[in-house]
Amino acid sequence: MRLFAAVLPPAGAVDELGLAVDRLQTLPDADELRWTARAGWHFTLAFLGEVDDALLPAVKEHLGRAAARQEPFPLRIDSGGHFGQRALWAGASGGLDPMRRLAERADAAARRAGVTMEEHRTYRAHLTVARSRTGETDLRPYVAALGGFEGAGWTVGELALVRSNLPAAEVRAEEPRYETVAAWALGH
Image (cartoon, rainbow, N blue to C red):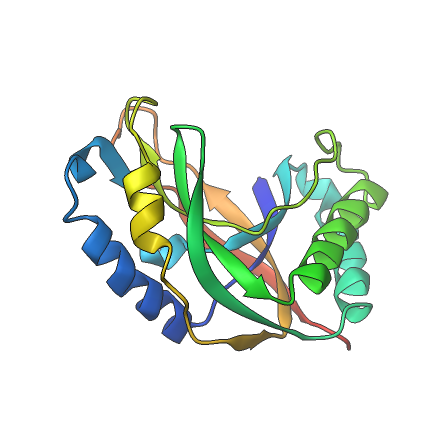
């Protein structure tokens, strides 16, 4: 199964960002972007990729320990950015250092559980809101429009293990479906 560790924003934060994204979708060339579904919005901490079912108990055990070592922290969805001309994202502010530590702990937990992880990269908190259909869309106007966005803060109190169910190859417009496999309270 295809898995990742994540922070899932609460419904109120998703709704606030959703209003801002609705405005982005009225900008010129917005149809060149594939907008992600609100139900799937998340901050990925560590992408585990395809994980053998036999490793799942160990993954859960180690992620549970990682969550226990991290105290809850404040966060808010804030402004935005882009990765080249491929992806438009909303950023975060508040407890970015604890979020980075939680991402590092989730990555280390997966490795300890026997998951072969990609090369470790510096963590950047982001929530993908759209992807370019062509890879050639100028995302700067969208980033500028998100520049003033600042959502209400909340306390991150949970680490989630999420399964990504990819759409069938022949269904182009369909989004991945996400389901929470397990979740652990931070600091417990």
